[in-house]
Image: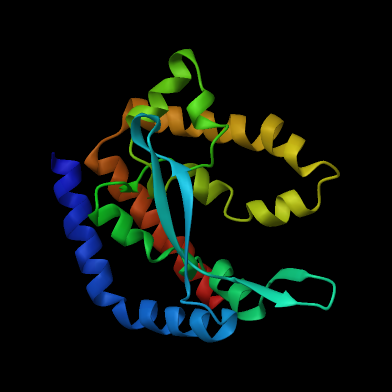
Length: 194
């Protein structure tokens, strides 16, 4: 109950403080992608239930004469680099589908297939940030340099994220959440000034 109250209060505060940034990023996404600027996708949530995650659209779909060409735009890459495309997920938190801190929500075929002790992760609401998301903030770049990105994800990244998320499950508290939020804030500030 305390975690939910904290999630709601923190999300309202962040949306109030950063509404200008969210609106600016959304406006850029609308112009850049020539869409409504919002992207939704099915993810696995608490207890294995599906929900629609909100993101700012970062991909352009262009007609290239031979069909459709799909690419991340320059503005889209900027939004992704600074995780601004994920700001709309504060609305997922307000709806009760996500928490501020928890395992990052994944697509079908990962958390929903866990067994035994590992399934405890599904007791948690997915989060905006976690120790695993901080450790693998550059996951896209890590995968880009792999000969077989899917295998690397399945055999290296996902098992390590699973281990970190299980550790969070066993040690979760408001104090731990605050430590992760502070670490995330530091990371964002360092990324902006570097």
